[in-house]
Image (cartoon, rainbow, N blue to C red; front, top):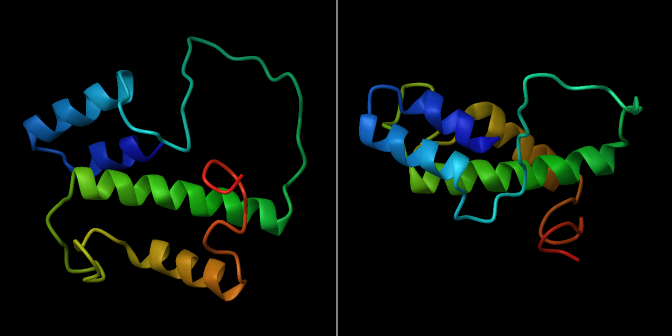
Length: 116
């Protein structure tokens, strides 16, 4: 979940950590991906590897969560960041975005929460 990423990127900022933790346990935003935690879990079905289109669609929606979380709780830019927008994007995320766009998988063409 994107909020876990924001926790790691805001170490030392107690106010932001409290805000992010509150959003994690009592969400007020429309997040695309959720985590479910328990003391134990049981595998009920083994799934195969999804096709590229399914993976790209999931990646696009997860990146939307990362972008939303980064806008809500930005971090100070670091030397390895691309200075795009608020400076929170990482090279790996930018590369994934380029690949998704190069494959023509962008906008609402994938369906999902805002494309159905």
